[in-house]
Figure 1 (cartoon, one colour):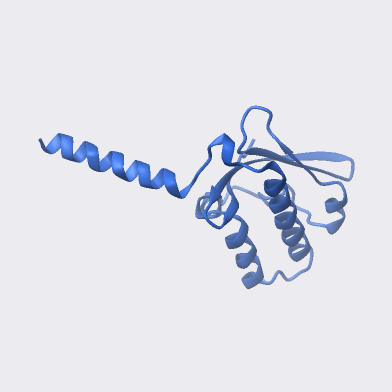
Figure 2 (tube, one colour; figure 1 turned 45 degrees about the vertical axis):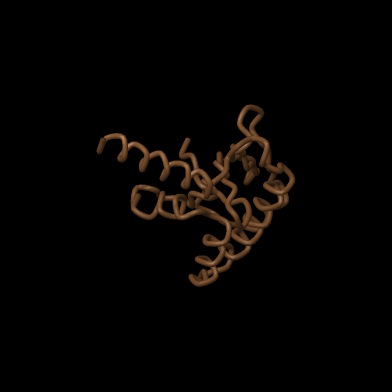
Length: 143
């Protein structure tokens, strides 16, 4: 009897959790996701290209466009010697001119951000989630 109750409780929690983050294919609007990514990267690169970086504005941008999952992903990893959102040590606004956003052909919530910097092509692989207040970056792949 206790096992059935525990199983029901676990299933209820799982259903509630899935309601908060909806990643089903029919609910993703590709143009809105691309617009969010463009807004994020424009804000992020513009802010980080000026030193010293305003920490409050930085946190505001990250909180607006990223889930806690992606924020925590790199917080404890001291081995990273580059900006994980750009896969680069240099941040210059000129990369925005070459930046493109592309949805994966198989997964609706997987996107690629690409840009060219000094003849080097950089691609960032991102997992997107839909939350009640819009789309957010949930995971940055390290590959």
